[in-house]
Image 1 (cartoon, rainbow, N blue to C red):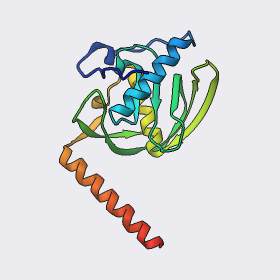
Image 2 (image 1 turned 180 degrees about the vertical axis):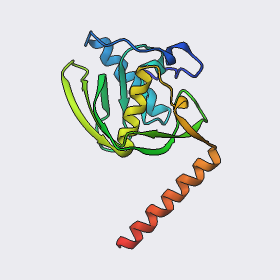
Image 3 (image 1 turned 45 degrees about the horizontal axis):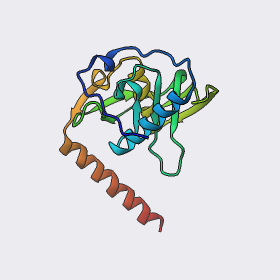
Length: 174
């Protein structure tokens, strides 16, 4: 496995519609493994193939300890509903954060690295991460959806507030 370079904006590969994967071979498996290692090394929760310079419909989401990463090859949105606005960032836009509205519940169908199809339902943060990566596969950048930019200081304050609230809720349960 290898840690790949993250493609930063501006770069044409980030704004093009990616090609469907038709070969489910060792090359695809290596790409998925390298993308995952690259995402983890860069402290990301998701990564799409164009972010490592490959214009293929391949993406990964992985943010839950103990869960297998979600590998999405040729993903398609089957169902979507609800909406939620939250702060997003992107490995291809270091230091840029903003509020983005996305569907809160979704169902996708996608292929595994061996070509078999699966369906997955997600909501909340997981749905947001999946949609962010699927947008990359269509050349859609999160900056085109930002309704309000957020500074690093504001983001740090939001994270600190959320952590304090989580600690308070834990203490109430004890």
